[in-house]
Image (cartoon, rainbow, N blue to C red):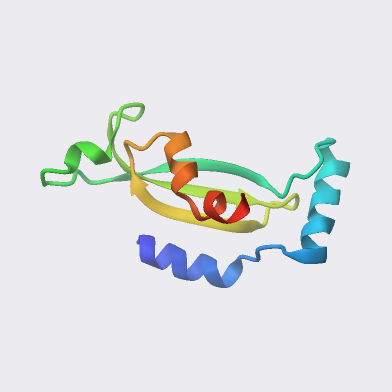
Length: 108
């Protein structure tokens, strides 16, 4: 499933660079008054069947009291996906997830 999501979204997403990135930041500033914003980001836990191995506890997400993997998505001001990162363990918190993502590594 993770592989399929990554393949499909890779074909549909567009990462803004150069003039398009500047235009996107201008649109966000006009829309919400925040300068230098390229998009809105959030993550979601995708429920999975319990993993039956020694690493099962790493997939356990206490808020849903079940097992999950995490997906992080970023959208532009028109709600089009510009980045999707899927597949980290459900026990990973938001801060850890962001720091492991492509967005964090490539936008600093």
